[in-house]
Structure formats: C-alpha cells, structure tokens
Image (cartoon, rainbow, N blue to C red; front, side, top):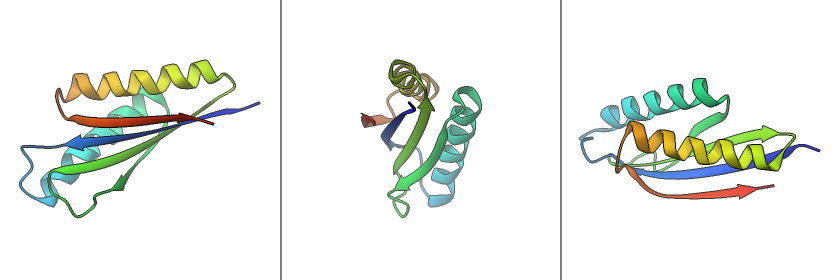
Length: 94
C-alpha cells in the first residue's frame, strides 16, 4: 500500500519587490527541496503577488511514517534556508 503526503506551505518573502525577485526565491527553494528530498514540488497559489507564495509538496512511500517524517523535514529545511519566511503550513496524509 502506498502512502501519499501533501504539504502546502505559505511563504512571506519580505525582500521581494517584484514578481521576478519572488520567482528567483521560489525557484531556489524548489530546486533545493526537490534535490534533497526527492519530492514533487510546485508553486500552487498567489502567482500574482510579490511577497506571498504558496508551494505544494507531495511525497510517496510505502510507509505513512516515512511520508510524515519527510514532509516535516521539508518544513524544517525551508525554515533553515529562509528563517521566518514560513507563515503557515498544512499537511495531509492520504
């Protein structure tokens, strides 16, 4: 049985003054998270806002515990990369 985990992270990017700057930050986050954790990741909402971004991450495994652990590690990793940028996050295991 495959377990699926979905994580949605809302970010506040205070130093962004344009969509271009925001996209650069999001691109770095996506690349680093994808390479480190082997998850699927995309920008999910707030495409037209300069300082707000919502990213969605999906992880698959045969163990629900492993999925949950991976998604928690992703949140901590983003927080270490960009302290204070995470406004909120929501996690679901399916």
